[in-house]
Image (cartoon, rainbow, N blue to C red):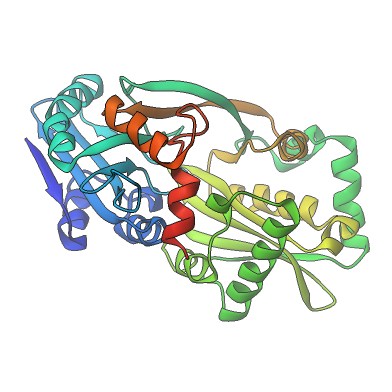
Length: 339
């Protein structure tokens, strides 16, 4: 049976029943990113003899698009999610869920479905999933000395230099208002410096809301009492996730970002976690992370056009090619939602 959940209390009940205690699958996290996307939070829960599937989604209305009235897209909240399968036969549960969800998506007028599948949680293969990348990880089960010995020589040097230059790092699982404000300011500065797309430029309100969610924290780098860099992290499924990073122009000279990643390794080990998930990113960022990584984990995406005719029509309506991004009109839509 497929259940459609629109309230926090009901969602919390299902998560408790199936032992799901993960920030990426929590209602506060879903609700936060639904607001950021200009959508509504919905939870889909399928239950059957072989197990259950829990799938939090943001339902993004497309009414602002020419011809989009009454239609919507389905997205996972930012970063990771996807159908979480529990029980003895996760593949059968997922097939049953997808079959049951079809009529619901048709009734909702779903045009596309987009999901970034959690690399440590999604155990069964979504029919429309494709391998997107091999994300970088650090194996935290090793001794810290052995992990650090595996860092690139430049990284080890920069960590030492950061300490010599007076940079300190501290971990905050309940960040203060000062830390939260500094992080939002540095994040805006970083995105502007990188000329990042609008889909990565989150508001101060969104970032502040993120930092009060259970399992989300900050690692802060300070120099002479000033916060020069900060790393937002999420504790999820036996791993610590590098989520959002921010830094000032001076942080590079101070080697603060190297110190932050070493602090993340130490914190993950203190918590008894198995992995630090570094992810990927633009080539320069991936190269930086690669100096710390000890391995990789497969990362899959779902990019499914549920209604091809409607999708092509919506793309034509705003003058974008259907294969330029996914969905191709997302930046156009987001620019109007966030005005």
